[in-house]
Image (cartoon, rainbow, N blue to C red; front, side, top):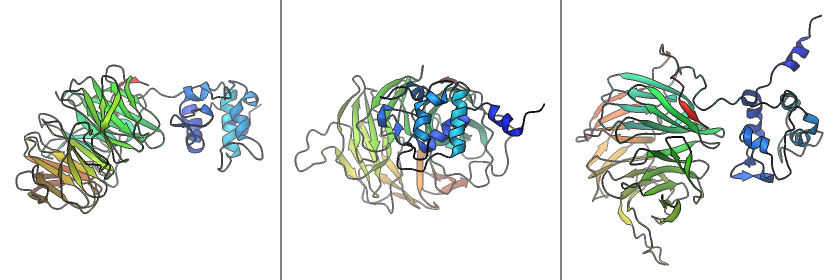
Length: 447
């Protein structure tokens, strides 16, 4: 006697990662996540879900009728999701089957999922780029990958394929032996990837939180990285084991950038809440806001030698500050650390970069890039033309000869840093074809 199709479907194994997690992400996690855990219940990971909340466990393995989660989502007028459409009957049935089958966790370890080589029909937005310290590699963000180019744009040398669909930050260690990337999937996970840019292999991958990560930076000793996130937290993680060394929660909005001071003792974070905050790394304590709150801080760069920091604002201005506490301010809100204000740009200043000698800054906005002397912010020394749309990332080649720029139109542009002439523009991803290359080797991972 043969089983019917319906019976076979009812017996099919249900995957937490592929089937249950997407239902929870779409319907539950807005209210049940670390930063907003109603009922003290976090549903963003399997471990947190199984831990339960203030009313006890939500899941009784093997017994959906005894599981509080099923009780809350079932019936003609279910208690959850709150103030939203009820789950579909098929979704509830899937959750019940998963519990009946033992409520098992099949979440893959970070860095172990197989990812197909991306195929592009249109160029993706370029959200991050970086030159290696010796200037031999230009790393560029793609979809689910980092593309390594020759520094003059003459050829693609490697495609580092990983789990993060979006790469929001790229930086090399000071010795050039490691390339760090941060990003993730919006509303699902944040991820840090550490790559060997010479061997083209992943070294380590670890996930942090349930939303994207931004503004990654290497500590001067190369043993840790700092990054911000849409979770409004400044994170610092050890590269040895991926464990969190800092969990700084003083910002009120997304943290988009971080920079270590040159002595490695302090960290600067920049956020959409208009603050650049100074953090003592020995204690993890907040020192002070470096600046007065004038604009949302959406881009950041540190002076190559001095403890000075440049940020770009959402209202079109870039400002240079001394990295110090702001104790000299008064009731008049004197901006005591402000060193230079640069002329207003036509749109948000979404990218800033220092020249390697620290004497100039490049400022990217909508449809233009301008270069200014560090001591005169009123008049640009160079205007880099040919840019279309917003500029999201800028980087000087370490010898100071070239400025690389990427942005919303998906073109990578290389400019002569001395004359401003456009040297080359090209799409950094292969369009319409997939390289005969498997996904990169899985990294040693840390949850």
